Amino acid sequence: MLQPSWHGACPFTAGTRRPDEPYPGREALRSAGPVVLAEAPAGGPVAIVTTAALARAVLGDPRMVKDSAWAPPDWDPRAAELEPTASQALSLTTTEGAPHAALRRAHAPMLSPRRMRARRDAMRDTARELLAAPDDGPVDLMADFTTRYPLAVVGDLLGVPRAMLDDAVEACRRMFGDEDEVAAAMGGFARLAATAMQHDGLARELRERLPADVTDEQVHYLLFTLLFVGQLTTGPALGFVLARVLAAGDGARRSSTRGNGDAWDGDTTALVDDVLRRDPPAPFTLWRFTAREVELAGIVLPPRTPVLVDLAGTADDPAAGPGPGLAFGAGPHLCAAVHLARAELVAAVDVLVTDFPDARLAVPAADLRRIDPGGIAGSRLAALPVEGLRPRERSGSS
Image 1 (cartoon, one colour):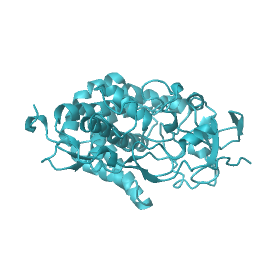
Image 2: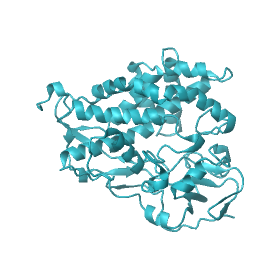
Image 3: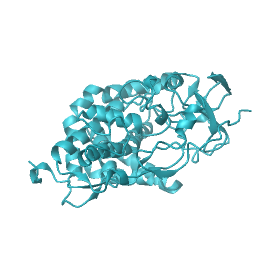
Image 4: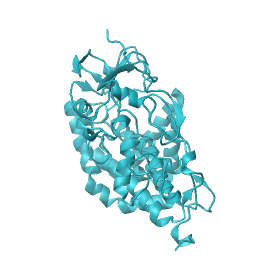
């Protein structure tokens, strides 16, 4: 029977640290080899891939699947942060093979680089509207903006009326509650999806692109993933990106956030990609499971072995590739919304710099803290207090 061999710092531990501090134990984990057998949060061994070259091979290997039906049978789905199985909910993240390819064909044209470029001005308008503060007092952007902005952008794309933005925010909040709260959240997302399908937007377009045998309930779940996962991943990334820009402008171009450049040189796309690479929306990939016996770096993994890729640990690995590296995955399950997420982040930075010249951190950058929730969930800034969020027309800057 496969047993964990890693006895160093647990890579799934919750905690609070400075933004420039690396994930606990990551350096030692990488030094232990390309594949490390650690104790999974839900119990039993998990194979953690620590090199980018092997990660790319794993992410494209059909023997390792994302359908949670292949999870160890003794795992508690909630404790393990498992998605519903592919038979329980139609999803881009858990389907494989031909069904997955059909879903990607339906989504890809709607989320293409060309379509996202066409939405650039609308995204900027949304960022401008939601960033503006009534006075110069400090505003915690992590408390509101990093939730509302991604939801507003995706909601506008799908056809969710802006009047329902508060409903979307509340549904996201409830997803972190108990089972009753999650059930209420899913009901809220279903109402948002049903409403979007009655308006012009990508929700209706997606319905038309999907096979006729896909039910409205299944479409609702696909739209839920775009809304909730879009906020869950883009929101924290937005905090790190804006912190980097604000710190560069405040402190003699010195930031306590990580990156090649402690300073920002004005190349927004490069900045966004560097932050995504070094502070990916999640430190690990979503769960994968071996569908049959697989050998990785000399280690034989029996069927149903959980497998993760250490995304946060590959930031400086040249094999991770250019731009954001492996932040959005690779292979058949490369994030379908990669162009949307990058466009959202670039638009927010452009607006902050161009339209809010007096914006500045309300605390020293070194005082910012990031929260690691533990497990495979991504970290986020505890707070991002900002002063001077006055639009340019009211600003005293010239």
